[in-house]
Image 1: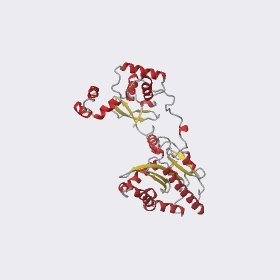
Image 2: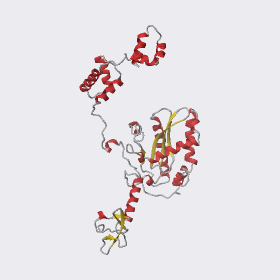
Image 3: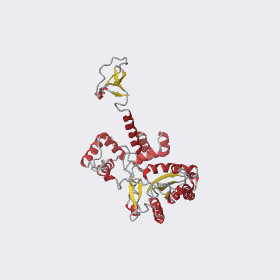
Image 4: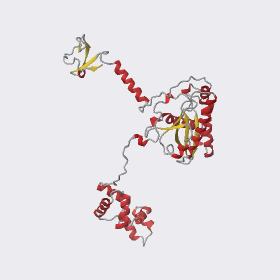
Length: 386
């Protein structure tokens, strides 16, 4: 390829470049890129390798782009940054820095403690725990981001922010303002009804997104009764409520409300219509097929049984499904414990039943046809559960 470019360069003063490129079977743009680079890399590759190694030895904290700039500026070597990167690979060198990421203590990483973990089922009243997350979606013509604020107890959506600007923090602030106003209104209503717990704090649980942990965001709730809780980094199981919510809400928006085909000016109205329908008309299985608004009204009217479970919750970082699996394993182990089940001893490729005698010692079953004599006794190593 370089030979073709060199021939075109030599003949370009007498013939059109387009015709020469066509004749040589190369692209015109490729020729001009080659020409802009200043031709071929130097044939003395050993010299370039020595210069790269020397520059790295003198300044080991810098990477190949910086070394490339030094070669071009100080030594007059015209090579690409990619060429220098390959020299780095060939020489087995890389930038050395003191700031490489190392694992740190969890407390140093989490801006707020996790006050929930897997105790979602202990939430016992409205506006006690609010969760929030952002989800993104595409319509036919544009990318959108939607932030929702969700009451864990009543399943109501009490705040939302929507934007077509990627990464705009305003949607989090708008939704939080709406949620804060709704929490204060609900607390005032609870005080008017003399509801127990009306003065309790409200936990706002989110992930560790940059906006959720920012000073400006948390300044909004600094003077309120809202306290912050964050999932652990890289642990989506710490916020399963919102992870699940985002999935089926988008499914309903696109399937039932035709969001994908809406024009830009219609999208916000469709989202608002959906939230109104969701809160007022959508039956919720976990609420006994009541709507979120009806369940909230029923609770405030005293028609829902009161329970006080949240204050006594046991915070455990182990996910609930893991704890349930361990509990089942322990129950199975207890039901099959030594002294309550028949045991088997393995010998000569077969399992031989063992029975406990009057001295509580397991022996080979007399009815067994195997000639096993060494697998009885109190030594647990020679005994296996059935």
